[in-house]
Length: 462
Image (cartoon, rainbow, N blue to C red):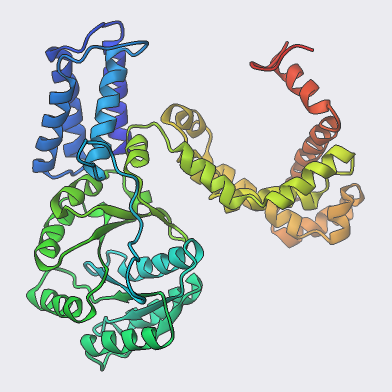
């Protein structure tokens, strides 16, 4: 949905440039483009109708003020309504802040995970455990009540260990109700803050599934009943959401595989159909690839505005500030920038999701420029460089000048590359080393002025 809607609105903004007022005619043009984009994104028809009606009501006759042109003003209205559709608004119509898990209850707080088979329930259970242990410092226990798939029980055990939480054993011979009550008793006696119950899924909605999950809800009395849905399901997600809404008092939605969704319709449809807020979004396959859903930020990404806040958070999470400080001090003092430092920079970038992960969060105009480069090839080149450096001895990394013909052949053989690749890496390293030398003392400012050809914007002349 992001690329389709963004492209359509970009074309519309260009055609409206120079007009001084929003009129019925240009609103109709814009709404036609938005309607087509939403339908192509697999948004449910009733949701599209409601959304279009709200945008039209807000847009008609609105005076364009300041430096805004009509196109920008209309995009602003669409952005606000997209955010309101996916998020929650207060009595005054203002968007509420993102909603995390409500744990205001006598421990253990029980979270019940519901959804179809293949929606990502088990993985999301572990990701949620990771979120609660790492970010909210809670003691978390997980349990699988899926007695129909023995592999699901083992899978939850594995991913829970990766999440740093604890797992309660269950078997396929037990009844789901008995498993849940035993896990709850264990959580109480061992002073857990949270118990997350992973329930059975089916390939399709059936009455047996709904009766079973109703019974679990009745005996556990969870503080949160979270509906897990695959963001790539499109229209199917709407039908599933309706069935679960009728069976359970849902308190929140978790959208999985949002990073792989080229259409995005589920985010709009499921929120409207269930009436429950979207609380989390699965944004990668990693165990920490779950984030609190921010409707305003997601609306910006849909409209091609990027997600700079997420980019900053990714940098803060991935960069070791102590190591960065040490490197800065090393460069400032004039100490040599060696291949260990070069390898550390590659490692920092990988922690931030690699080149593709960072580009994905840029505004569309910048992302398009970056897309001109072959990101797949760039990622492969980075991995190749890492392999070459790892094939060197500690002495060679500290003193690259020692690497001559014989050593190059050994390193190339160890990394599984040609000697030319080792030469290329050493050349790139020498260029960076030269740049680092120029940064010693006040050299950084001088270098930036030379690069700017008379001065970088914002840097005063010296």
